Image 1 (cartoon, rainbow, N blue to C red):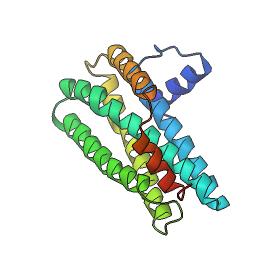
Image 2 (tube, rainbow, N blue to C red; image 1 turned 90 degrees about the vertical axis):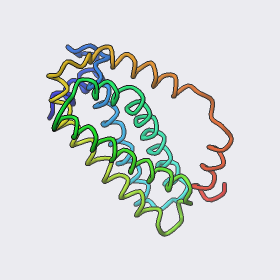
Image 3 (cartoon, rainbow, N blue to C red; image 1 turned 30 degrees about the vertical axis):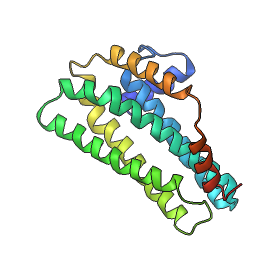
Length: 185
């Protein structure tokens, strides 16, 4: 178990020896949440109810979109400012992978859950998201933990932005998309 994953687990239990706004702990907690949502989707997929499967997929899409927005707006610029060479290349690869995942999110959000390609698209989305999160935790996070990055300040900005994004009103277009995914209901 990585250091960031252990600290994220401790933070959830209220026993964190790290500051609760450590950027890497926050991201690892998001990784854990996305992984949990992916497992829930798999349970719904096996159950065969396309409406529940669609709901689970939309929860994943929402979590990934929130996570990606925070990383692109706050985390990546902060990390880019302190990394160089091979470490900066790792960050660039993560950003490009995120862009590919966002394309898959858009495809899922525009495909009915009973469409034959829906499960395959979700499988690829889940696989790419899990691979990205694992690579970040194993390769990028240890380098950032030992860099000049202000993990607390960055984490506080990330938490504030996540709260802002998570409390904004839902627009009607998102509701229409959700209905499309769940089969027009």
